[in-house]
Amino acid sequence: MKTKELIEYLQGFDAESEVVVIAANPKERKKYDGEMFGITDGGQPIFCIEISNESDLDEKEIAAAVQDEREEKQR
Figure (tube, rainbow, N blue to C red):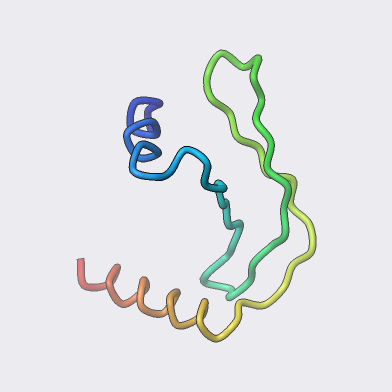
């Protein structure tokens, strides 16, 4: 993703809304807690997520993963 694409994407949201990043392994039906932070001296936008605490996806998240897998197979 280019910075330009990220900026265009973010312009579709309220500037005061929270940014949510989900760390997951949909095939294994796992998700992870994490803390996101930005690295500002890298010469480009860098988002880093410190991962912790693995847990199982809930029923709604599993249904979404299954739907995504079906759609991917149809492409």
